[in-house]
Length: 419
Image (spheres, rainbow, N blue to C red):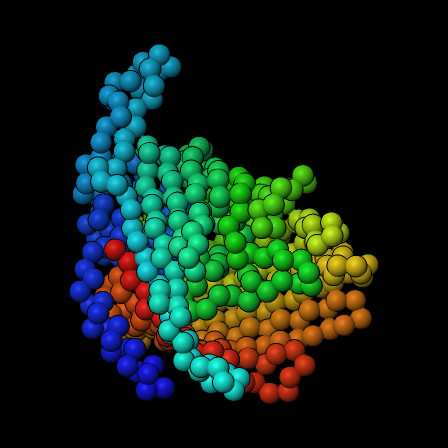
């Protein structure tokens, strides 16, 4: 454990010089805390910024007023008046909109087998991400992520979005390698370790919500920015060619707080801190797909569920229930399967830079005559050394299927910084 403490002081000393800020912070000359409670977890304004096609709330002109970098014009405004006899004008960012995020992790295994190290610095760095995002035009946005991990590079995400096809954010269309908007929580936005509901497979069907998928998604806001919907058609499991294609849809409604489009209603006084958003949101979702297992076996499956997301002063309390049904999830077997997930998570803003968090997860896998249940607690502590430098400590206290007691799994100390 002494080595772990040494790592804390060493990494703080090395990285406090990091003072650059990511691409959008540079564009608007603002802090990361404008959109993030703790990177990558978004606050209400950050979620609205994303829904608006990476533009400030209030429309195109309001966004232009907030931007501090003058874009490079790709055609005269007069071309709009003579269209279709000219190409519709647009603009490019004045600087290349790139950001880099570096994730380091020290892992401590209190129950490591004899002869194996309990403390590992093997994930220095764990992953390096090169991010790019911005706008090609008033209502055309893009985002891409290239990740380097374990000596390999992968294009995690790359999509273009046609925003505000219908007025007031009623319809936008996203095309490319996307994060399917099925639930409000994803492994792209978690504050500690990955969610079980998004990572654990059922039987031999390796499909899950953890990975981005190739496809197209429609999304939008209705009911004066309170009702959100999404629907998508994607390749599905591991982005392999899928003749049938997977599809999904999602619906959510937010009561109180900032509207989902970022517009504050006249009767609302507004928060005193960017992380405050006294509100409650309910969401429901359905996903349907077909996976090809080893040997060519087909497994038709679906998952449905719902979630709640409550913000009250400094507390954020979230919960999710998801049920997956498969018809043939085990290779060589004909029985069906059911996987049930329950998740609840609490995050508290003790100080704007210090956030304790705890999560409980429960998973039951029923495969034919067999049934196994696993549980775990994930306590954590997030410390923002700077707005773009984060220290993250979390542990896994797990009760595996067939085991009688909860046991400490791994303890991870992460250092994430972006510029």
